[in-house]
Image 1: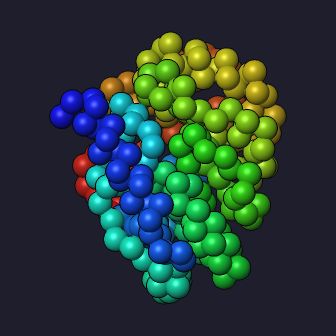
Image 2 (image 1 turned 180 degrees about the vertical axis):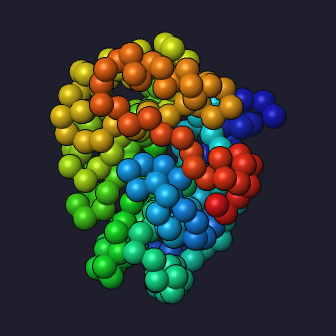
Length: 235
Protein backbone atom coordinates (compact mmCIF):
# COMPACT_ATOMS: atom_id res chain seq x y z
CA UNK A 1 0.00 0.00 0.00
CA UNK A 2 1.34 3.47 -0.89
CA UNK A 3 1.84 6.06 1.85
CA UNK A 4 -1.04 8.10 0.36
CA UNK A 5 -3.37 5.10 0.49
CA UNK A 6 -2.27 4.27 4.03
CA UNK A 7 -2.96 7.85 5.13
CA UNK A 8 -6.41 7.74 3.52
CA UNK A 9 -7.23 4.45 5.23
CA UNK A 10 -6.00 5.80 8.57
CA UNK A 11 -8.14 8.96 8.20
CA UNK A 12 -11.17 6.83 7.34
CA UNK A 13 -10.72 4.73 10.48
CA UNK A 14 -10.53 7.82 12.67
CA UNK A 15 -13.66 9.17 10.94
CA UNK A 16 -15.51 6.02 11.95
CA UNK A 17 -14.90 6.93 15.58
CA UNK A 18 -16.39 10.36 15.09
CA UNK A 19 -19.58 8.84 13.66
CA UNK A 20 -20.23 6.44 16.51
CA UNK A 21 -23.42 6.88 18.55
CA UNK A 22 -23.23 9.01 21.72
CA UNK A 23 -22.65 6.96 24.82
CA UNK A 24 -20.80 4.22 22.93
CA UNK A 25 -17.16 3.28 22.41
CA UNK A 26 -15.46 1.28 19.68
CA UNK A 27 -13.82 -1.53 21.65
CA UNK A 28 -11.20 -3.95 20.38
CA UNK A 29 -11.21 -6.31 23.37
CA UNK A 30 -11.93 -6.66 27.08
CA UNK A 31 -9.98 -9.24 29.05
CA UNK A 32 -8.48 -10.12 32.42
CA UNK A 33 -4.75 -10.68 32.90
CA UNK A 34 -1.80 -9.61 35.02
CA UNK A 35 -0.66 -6.03 34.82
CA UNK A 36 2.49 -6.20 32.72
CA UNK A 37 3.99 -2.76 33.24
CA UNK A 38 4.23 0.16 35.63
CA UNK A 39 4.36 0.33 39.40
CA UNK A 40 1.44 -2.13 39.64
CA UNK A 41 3.09 -4.82 37.51
CA UNK A 42 2.07 -8.33 38.54
CA UNK A 43 -1.37 -7.43 39.89
CA UNK A 44 -4.54 -8.95 38.41
CA UNK A 45 -6.20 -6.38 36.18
CA UNK A 46 -9.12 -6.01 33.79
CA UNK A 47 -8.10 -4.42 30.49
CA UNK A 48 -10.39 -2.44 28.20
CA UNK A 49 -8.68 -1.90 24.84
CA UNK A 50 -10.15 0.79 22.61
CA UNK A 51 -9.86 0.79 18.82
CA UNK A 52 -7.79 3.22 16.70
CA UNK A 53 -4.61 5.21 17.15
CA UNK A 54 -3.32 8.34 15.45
CA UNK A 55 0.32 7.27 15.88
CA UNK A 56 2.35 4.61 14.10
CA UNK A 57 5.29 3.79 16.39
CA UNK A 58 7.85 1.51 14.77
CA UNK A 59 7.67 -0.91 17.71
CA UNK A 60 3.88 -0.97 18.12
CA UNK A 61 2.75 -4.35 19.48
CA UNK A 62 -0.99 -3.79 19.02
CA UNK A 63 -1.51 -2.89 15.33
CA UNK A 64 -4.53 -5.20 15.40
CA UNK A 65 -6.26 -2.53 17.50
CA UNK A 66 -5.93 0.14 14.80
CA UNK A 67 -9.15 -0.80 13.05
CA UNK A 68 -10.78 -3.93 14.47
CA UNK A 69 -13.51 -3.41 17.04
CA UNK A 70 -17.21 -3.29 17.84
CA UNK A 71 -19.50 -0.61 19.21
CA UNK A 72 -20.30 -1.06 22.88
CA UNK A 73 -22.47 1.00 25.18
CA UNK A 74 -20.83 2.30 28.33
CA UNK A 75 -23.48 0.54 30.39
CA UNK A 76 -22.61 -2.85 28.88
CA UNK A 77 -18.87 -2.27 29.27
CA UNK A 78 -19.29 -1.26 32.87
CA UNK A 79 -21.32 -4.39 33.61
CA UNK A 80 -18.70 -6.64 32.00
CA UNK A 81 -15.76 -5.05 33.81
CA UNK A 82 -17.44 -5.02 37.22
CA UNK A 83 -18.48 -8.67 36.82
CA UNK A 84 -14.82 -9.71 37.13
CA UNK A 85 -14.73 -8.11 40.58
CA UNK A 86 -11.08 -7.05 40.27
CA UNK A 87 -10.14 -3.75 41.91
CA UNK A 88 -7.74 -2.70 39.13
CA UNK A 89 -8.87 -1.67 35.63
CA UNK A 90 -6.71 -0.36 32.78
CA UNK A 91 -8.04 1.62 29.84
CA UNK A 92 -5.71 1.21 26.89
CA UNK A 93 -5.60 1.07 23.12
CA UNK A 94 -4.88 2.09 20.46
CA UNK A 95 -5.23 5.57 21.83
CA UNK A 96 -8.15 5.74 24.29
CA UNK A 97 -8.37 9.55 24.30
CA UNK A 98 -9.43 9.59 20.65
CA UNK A 99 -12.90 8.63 21.90
CA UNK A 100 -14.35 11.34 24.12
CA UNK A 101 -16.89 9.04 25.79
CA UNK A 102 -14.00 7.20 27.43
CA UNK A 103 -14.09 9.90 30.10
CA UNK A 104 -17.58 8.81 31.12
CA UNK A 105 -16.44 5.18 31.36
CA UNK A 106 -13.44 6.09 33.52
CA UNK A 107 -15.54 8.27 35.83
CA UNK A 108 -18.13 5.55 36.32
CA UNK A 109 -15.48 2.95 37.04
CA UNK A 110 -13.93 5.25 39.65
CA UNK A 111 -17.40 5.89 41.12
CA UNK A 112 -17.74 2.11 41.44
CA UNK A 113 -14.62 1.99 43.59
CA UNK A 114 -12.19 0.71 40.98
CA UNK A 115 -8.59 1.85 40.70
CA UNK A 116 -8.48 3.10 37.11
CA UNK A 117 -5.35 3.37 34.97
CA UNK A 118 -5.27 5.16 31.63
CA UNK A 119 -2.42 4.30 29.26
CA UNK A 120 -2.03 7.00 26.63
CA UNK A 121 0.49 7.60 23.88
CA UNK A 122 0.91 11.19 25.02
CA UNK A 123 -0.20 12.90 21.86
CA UNK A 124 -3.53 14.21 23.18
CA UNK A 125 -4.43 16.56 26.04
CA UNK A 126 -4.74 14.76 29.39
CA UNK A 127 -6.34 17.68 31.26
CA UNK A 128 -9.95 16.41 30.85
CA UNK A 129 -9.08 13.09 32.55
CA UNK A 130 -10.75 12.55 35.93
CA UNK A 131 -8.13 13.27 38.64
CA UNK A 132 -8.93 9.93 40.28
CA UNK A 133 -7.50 8.15 37.23
CA UNK A 134 -3.81 7.23 37.26
CA UNK A 135 -2.28 8.11 33.90
CA UNK A 136 0.62 6.22 32.37
CA UNK A 137 1.93 8.78 29.89
CA UNK A 138 4.14 7.45 27.12
CA UNK A 139 6.74 9.99 25.97
CA UNK A 140 7.66 9.04 22.42
CA UNK A 141 11.40 8.91 21.77
CA UNK A 142 13.02 9.70 18.40
CA UNK A 143 13.49 5.97 17.81
CA UNK A 144 9.72 5.46 17.94
CA UNK A 145 9.27 7.55 14.80
CA UNK A 146 6.59 9.61 16.60
CA UNK A 147 8.51 12.02 18.84
CA UNK A 148 7.11 14.96 16.89
CA UNK A 149 3.63 13.92 18.03
CA UNK A 150 4.29 14.38 21.77
CA UNK A 151 1.92 16.88 23.36
CA UNK A 152 4.53 18.46 25.62
CA UNK A 153 2.12 20.51 27.80
CA UNK A 154 0.95 17.17 29.23
CA UNK A 155 4.13 17.02 31.31
CA UNK A 156 3.02 20.16 33.15
CA UNK A 157 -0.27 18.53 34.16
CA UNK A 158 0.99 15.30 35.70
CA UNK A 159 -0.33 14.36 39.15
CA UNK A 160 1.53 12.46 41.88
CA UNK A 161 -0.50 9.32 41.07
CA UNK A 162 0.59 9.38 37.41
CA UNK A 163 3.59 7.70 35.77
CA UNK A 164 5.74 8.51 32.74
CA UNK A 165 7.10 5.84 30.40
CA UNK A 166 9.95 5.95 27.89
CA UNK A 167 10.45 3.05 25.45
CA UNK A 168 14.11 3.09 24.43
CA UNK A 169 15.31 1.75 21.08
CA UNK A 170 19.05 2.50 21.32
CA UNK A 171 21.65 4.59 23.17
CA UNK A 172 20.66 7.90 21.49
CA UNK A 173 17.09 7.24 22.64
CA UNK A 174 18.30 6.67 26.20
CA UNK A 175 20.36 9.86 26.22
CA UNK A 176 17.43 11.80 24.78
CA UNK A 177 15.16 10.36 27.49
CA UNK A 178 17.56 11.45 30.24
CA UNK A 179 17.56 14.95 28.80
CA UNK A 180 13.76 15.10 28.82
CA UNK A 181 13.61 13.68 32.35
CA UNK A 182 15.99 16.34 33.62
CA UNK A 183 14.55 19.24 31.62
CA UNK A 184 11.03 18.56 32.91
CA UNK A 185 12.11 17.56 36.45
CA UNK A 186 10.06 14.39 36.12
CA UNK A 187 11.80 12.46 38.90
CA UNK A 188 10.73 15.14 41.38
CA UNK A 189 7.08 14.57 40.55
CA UNK A 190 6.21 11.07 39.30
CA UNK A 191 7.64 7.57 38.90
CA UNK A 192 9.64 7.38 35.68
CA UNK A 193 9.53 4.04 33.85
CA UNK A 194 12.04 3.08 31.20
CA UNK A 195 11.69 0.04 28.95
CA UNK A 196 13.76 -1.59 26.23
CA UNK A 197 12.22 -1.92 22.80
CA UNK A 198 11.23 -5.59 23.10
CA UNK A 199 13.30 -7.79 20.81
CA UNK A 200 15.50 -4.94 19.60
CA UNK A 201 17.42 -3.58 22.59
CA UNK A 202 18.85 -6.20 24.98
CA UNK A 203 17.45 -5.74 28.48
CA UNK A 204 20.85 -6.16 30.10
CA UNK A 205 22.22 -3.31 28.00
CA UNK A 206 19.51 -0.93 29.16
CA UNK A 207 19.98 -2.13 32.75
CA UNK A 208 23.64 -1.13 32.59
CA UNK A 209 22.80 2.31 31.26
CA UNK A 210 20.25 2.82 34.05
CA UNK A 211 22.83 1.86 36.68
CA UNK A 212 25.43 4.15 35.13
CA UNK A 213 23.00 7.08 35.13
CA UNK A 214 22.75 6.89 38.94
CA UNK A 215 19.17 8.12 38.65
CA UNK A 216 16.18 6.47 40.38
CA UNK A 217 14.66 5.26 37.14
CA UNK A 218 12.37 2.25 37.29
CA UNK A 219 13.46 -0.13 34.56
CA UNK A 220 10.61 -2.35 33.49
CA UNK A 221 10.15 -5.36 31.27
CA UNK A 222 6.82 -6.29 29.73
CA UNK A 223 5.81 -9.10 32.08
CA UNK A 224 3.00 -10.33 29.84
CA UNK A 225 5.45 -10.88 26.97
CA UNK A 226 7.87 -12.76 29.18
CA UNK A 227 5.05 -15.03 30.39
CA UNK A 228 3.04 -15.61 27.23
CA UNK A 229 5.21 -14.43 24.34
CA UNK A 230 5.22 -11.28 22.24
CA UNK A 231 2.40 -12.18 19.86
CA UNK A 232 -0.31 -13.67 22.08
CA UNK A 233 -3.40 -11.44 22.43
CA UNK A 234 -5.72 -11.06 25.36
CA UNK A 235 -2.95 -11.17 27.97
